[in-house]
Length: 414
Length: 166
Image (cartoon, rainbow over all chains, first blue to last red):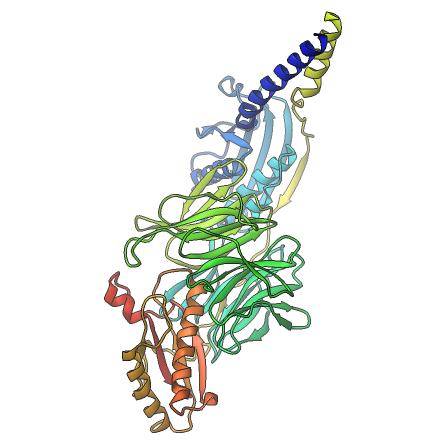
């Protein structure tokens, strides 16, 4: 009888604990208010505030107060109305010699100063990056899981006319954009290194497509290889030493792996139809890719060095884009019935063995899924009701945000 | 016995309670965000082809949606082009440019455009044009002849263009 009573109490405790845990996941996001001490005349004031709010939201670790509170940051006090929050972030921007920001973080309940920091940048145009830096460092200081992807460049290509394009650097909100290559036809940009110093792209300005690597800081351009037909760098290994290419030296598009230092390549797929878009799975000993070997575009998996191919996705009739992180796979699937009717492409998350498939989007044309560097957030491009947006889905917190994107994107990476 | 159960319960509660709030360390730091990037202008680079359609008497070859097979009508066009290559462009190199409509991702479309160009190449070879005379490239959906959202326009964009290489 005693043991039954002990057992009963134990189960009761864990039952209560399980319920509390579910509620706690939502409540674990820190409530934070922002107080702007910049003064109302600063032109970028509202945009900077909105950027901070977006960053806090998409991180998945904060519940930001959307009210744009204003007040001096010189005093180390917290307004009574904000004492119910967890934190108060006071900041002040100034435009002397570029852009400067002074930031103070307070514990809201007792107004204790937790941190103070100054930021500066020479170009005010890059103000979104200052906001991203503030939030990512705040996040790190509070020991939340990493969100350093906020600081990264997004790179994309866009057609400007027939056989003309630009390649553009942007912050993840698309508020900052700078053309890095203009003129000619240069497509499929892909970051070459984790620190984003250089990227690969395909130039169509010669007789045959040529892959180059460009350093975005000093402009040095290195020819990697050329191939008749088509040539795309679809993925880069973590240490940058190997790249996956879609090449067609015999006018047959297949996936190859190249060791960048030696330029040696080995063919991975060997199929008479279309194999494109190879992405490394965890361990980089196998890939997922898009192939029409079943008569329509679908997602397959193959070990590098083996000819055995296995199907990953078993639904949909046109799954034509894929990305992978570890064992996680995200793909785009066309869901319209009529080839010439309104197209709907939705994103799905699955695993390399095809299990656990779930939708990530439900409306519009959603394409170009790309995992963040930590695999917790997915970037994608959405076309809906004649509007084009770049979207982000935080897979952990299920937060999602959309930002306007002018014009149709040809290819994107981050 | 009751005391033991109570003690046990307290211990379990303590073990399963949430972690205390982490205390961040205060600090002051000056932090500079720098790094200006370049802009490369390739407007002056010689583009291999400014054409938007075939040239020098050759005709574009058209394809069905998602397809890269040569249809009966397309075969007649290829035969005509083979005559131009072997006659007027005797010995010269030609470039076959595969193109697609706007549906699907661009990387897949580049591959589809290339398969179309290859299909035309194979057909030209079958009619006596030497393989060494032919260069292939795909422009995917980058080179539309029209932009209207109509079946007719989509069809015009699903094509292979032919040009001499100069």
